[in-house]
Image 1 (cartoon, rainbow, N blue to C red):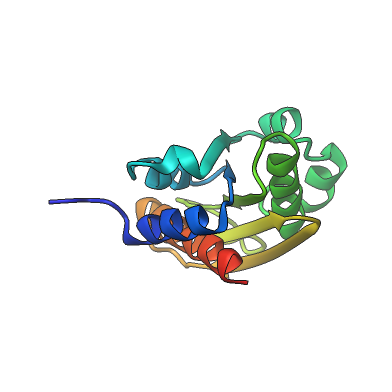
Image 2: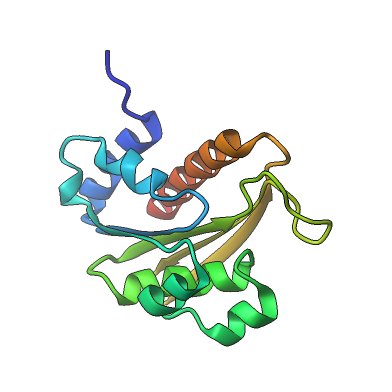
Length: 160
């Protein structure tokens, strides 16, 4: 019985048809999106690389996220997600990149609650961002929900 993520299977099919190469920049998901994609046989045809940038220093060093952005908005922000996605494009051979940064839990604050995840998606010269409040689902469930949402974002980008 296959355990392949159906979203990832659909992503492989659509990205192959569109001849698109993908990169990921992940923080709170810790590589789950990259793993979901690379679990699929043939994914090397559409997946260039994944950056797991859990610390602010890694975001700055590997993706070029500005320290000023991190200081002004924090790691969990659409501004940081946008810079992460832009950095993934700049530091890869991909034409489509996605970034995920959030608070999987436990914890959070009134200002940035547990379950808040910010996303950035970059292609060509476009960067779009969004924030989803998944709520206090527990760490594993927030991370899985963020992974699924990210795969849906990539599918949506290929449909546009």
